[in-house]
Amino acid sequence: MLRLSGTLLNRPVLSLRTGGLVATTTNPIINPDNLKIEGFYCFGGDDKVARVLLYQDIRDIIPQGFVVDDYNVLAETEELVRLQKIMSIGFDPLGKQVVTVRKEKVGKVSDYATEMETMYIQKIYVSQSLLKSFTGGNLGIDRSQIHEITPKKIIVQDLIKTAPAVTPAGV
Image 1: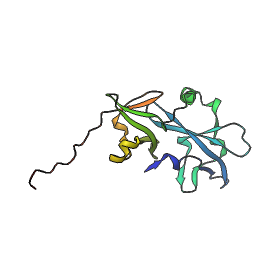
Image 2: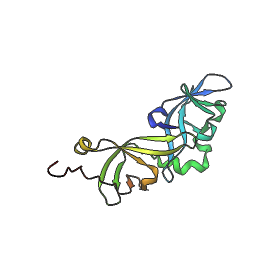
Image 3: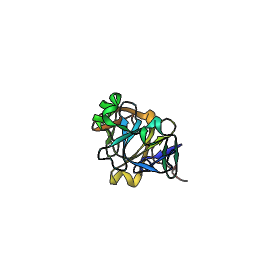
Image 4: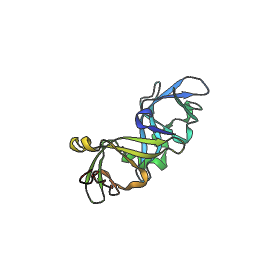
């Protein structure tokens, strides 16, 4: 099932053991190499520093929030040695410029949809400039159309332009 980014942020993290709230997600940790959400930064209870909820520790996602075994699954950032590089990048697709391989500006990422089973971002939604939005609106771009991701922009395959419908003369 796909979920938009807004449904993943500022969500309660609930414990199966205590049956209560243990934290709240703030920002996702996204690997820019493969567009996978590796986890979420969380703040809970008396925490003064962010903890991390790894995606593999999420038992279920219900309308009330993320379900985990217990508060103990939330790791301190220093403990996650393999994720240090990804966390230091702080990649967030929202607001990134989107251009084609031919360097045509498409717009900026306004949202993205994540497959909840795998936690891969499957689609990015691009808001176009005011002039283009009158004719085309927002664009949905599948992950298979993404050519490259840089720190400042997302490069996608060239978009197919459709010709306006033409009616034959005399009809």
